[in-house]
Image 1 (tube, rainbow, N blue to C red):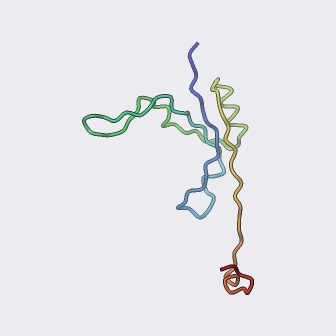
Image 2 (tube, one colour; image 1 turned 60 degrees about the vertical axis):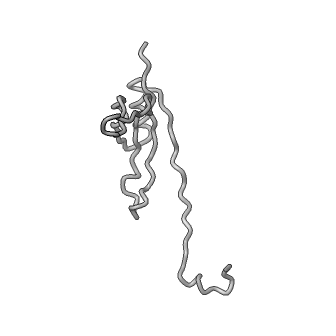
Image 3 (tube, rainbow, N blue to C red; image 1 turned 180 degrees about the vertical axis):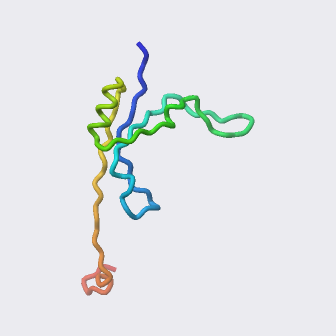
Length: 101
């Protein structure tokens, strides 16, 4: 029996360079690297023989991504997204008498 590559199913976090939540609503399926990276002795570039790590598949829902992994007999692990804590701040709070220094 051929060993299947393990896949990771997750929802990507917002980039530090973006203010909105674009590209964070879909779920991604990507393979977990099985081989380490090597440094090319001539050019010094870092590379790997594992080309499966270059592929990322997008799905509308978590269940669709899991169904894909099950349908293709990929062992998978699901990483649930972390909840974002929003702290509302007002400019007037800078001048509040109850403000901690």
